[in-house]
Image 1 (tube, rainbow, N blue to C red):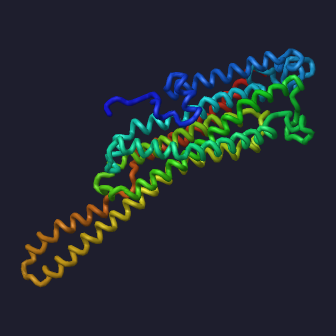
Image 2 (cartoon, rainbow, N blue to C red):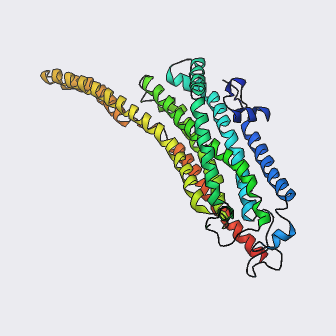
Image 3 (cartoon, helix red, strand yellow):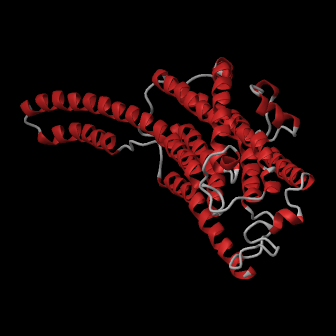
Length: 379
C-alpha cells in the first residue's frame, strides 16, 4: 500500500463510537478534537443556563469574588474551579475515548500489508481474519462497555464535590460547593460514564487483540533470526498500543492538578491505564522473544550436531589445514547464530518508548508549574 489511509472505511463500523467518527468526517484525530470541543461547550452552556456560575454562587466558593471568599485564597479564574476543571478534562477524555478504537482500526489497515507478509498470508486474508474477530467479539464488548458505564457512574459519587453530602453520606472535601454549583453534577452523570464505558471497552479490545495475535504467532513459521526487521509490524503494533494508552493516562493525570478533586477514586483508575500501556508493549514483545529464542536454540543444536560429526571425522585425518578450512565456516555460522538479536526491538524503539512513558510525567510537571505561576500572578 503506497498511500497511508487516514479515515475509517465503511466495513470498520463495528460500534456506535466508530459511527460517531464516521459522521464527523471519518478521520479519528480531527474527530476527537471536535468531540472534546462540543463536550466542553455543552458543559458551559448547561452551567451558565442553570445558574451554576451565578454571582451568588461564586460568592460562596472559596476563592470566589464575593465578601464570603476565603481571605487567604486567590480569586477564582474561569474554568479553574473543581467542576470547571473536571469538565475540561472529561471533555478531552471523551474525545479520546470515542476515537481511540477508530484510530487503531485505521492504523491496523495501514500496517496490514507488512503484517501479512510477516505472517506469510495475503493482506486480504489478514483483513478478513481481523474483521471476523472484531464482529465475533462485539457482543462481549457491549457487555464490558455496560459494566464500564456503571463503574464510571459509581466512581463519580465520591469523586465530585458535594455529591456524597447530597446523598446523606460523609464526603472527603474540606468545603462544599454551593447548591447552585451542585447542579453541575448532572452534566457529569450524563457525560462521564460514557467515557469510562469506552475506556473499559477499549481495555477489553486490547486484550482481545492480543489473543488474536498470540494465535497468529503460534501459527506463523519460525522468524528469520538474521533479519529481525521482518518483525517490524510487531513493534509497530506494540508501540501504537502503548502510545494510545499513554495518551489516556496523560489526560487523566491532569485531574490531579486540582486540589478540589478527590484523587482517591481516580488515581487507581489512571494508574491502571498507565500499567496497561506498559503491558500492551511488553506482552507481545515477550511472546516474540520466546519464539526467537526457541528458533535460535533449534538452529544452534543443528549446527552443533554438524560440527560434532565433522570434528569426529576430521580428528581421524592427518591434514590439519583441511580440517581448519572445513570447520571455519561452521564455527562462523555458530557464532553468528549466537550473536543474533533475541528481541524484535532496537535502541531507537526503546528510545521512543521512554519518550512515550515520559509524556504523562512531563505534562503533569508542566501543569503543576503553570498552576504555581497562575497562583503567583493572581495573589
